[in-house]
Image (tube, rainbow, N blue to C red; front, side, top):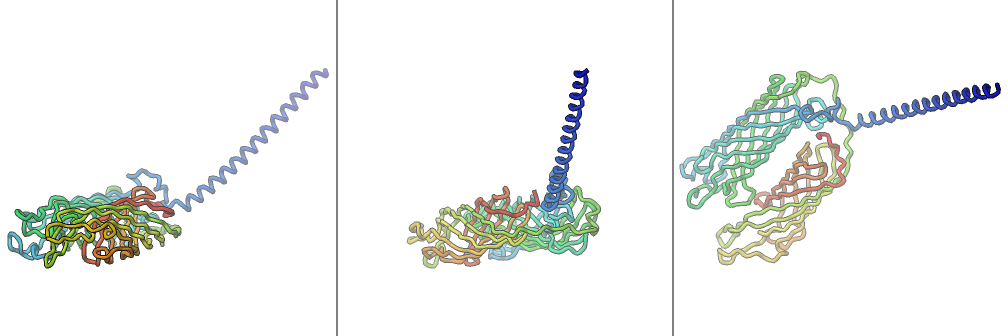
Length: 431
């Protein structure tokens, strides 16, 4: 009897302990779930603060995050008469005035009314292919251009009409360059491959969900960056007319939104850009009353180190320390045939320049104005100007394509290199 009572007590005590342990476990799970829910809500709240692409667009596949576009474009133009060759001193003894080009372009852009669209003005970017006819096939050729481009809104008049800009930058092939025996008159183009630069302003009119019409004006420059002689280059001004097909644009994007997407405050900060570059250039030397081109191409190496204050999403500015070795600097000739290099100290310089940059997704366009502070005089004693394009590779690295002038009119050299950005706190909205 006693053993039976004892057994029931043990069983009852085991049940109480099991109940208490189950209750404690349940309470622990409830507390854990509450803590998890709190952590999730906290994470979601922070994510909503930091995620600048609403509706989960950031995590969609590439094809759905963007509007994809194809454009066909025509650009009739006028060739600016910057030389006697273009004015009529050529094989046909008539002015070379007309240019015409056809372009086929692919681009992608951000969905309208998203945060990224508001910040960057509907920025789009892509690749283009063009065919140029320059009114003198025999002496100039019919070049083909392959280029990167980017554009965005300047002003939005209504959901269907805006004023936009677009730049193109790339290479053009198929030129007929200067040749002493076979193309003597063409003293403006010295190489078969030349840089292609274009800037356009146009109206973007949305005709329907699929189609946009883009009439505007166009400015174009071709040159070889002083890598060969001659290098006068060719410039055109004209008009453009394009028709854009939007593959996956929605109807609601062509009407006024019910609300404006909030743009988070930009974290202002100082970042540091280090650029290492190199190139080659040709040199002309004045000897008496003659301007003699050197037959040799000279090496150029250099670096820029620029602390830059990031004012906002689209603008940064600062000061750059610029070092350069220019193998053509202060080269001279005594007999008109032999070109002599000076000592190394006359080909090295250290300068200081002010920099300003326009920041957009994937690309940054920068300008600089400076002077060499430490130099041995001669060619290096000059004010220099820089135009540069930075192409994003990763968050903290980029390709650098620049061009330098001195004294605002004389070509200096190309600046082809790679750059690294330190202390970069810039929000990445476009990846």
